[in-house]
Length: 72
Image (cartoon, one colour):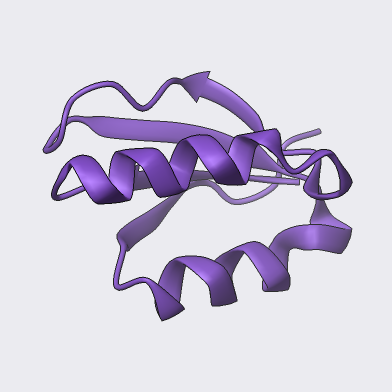
């Protein structure tokens, strides 16, 4: 699993992150929830879903970084 730090630039991206969190098949676990644009959002993503989540973030122009490379 990895923990990604995502920054939502506007309210629309906040909503997209919330929708991402509601997709049970992706099993995304928010460590810091999306509330205010410009504030970092931390989410743990299970390894099998990592590429799909990263593609989704990329396709919606999110900036993100890997905060924890390998969560044990």
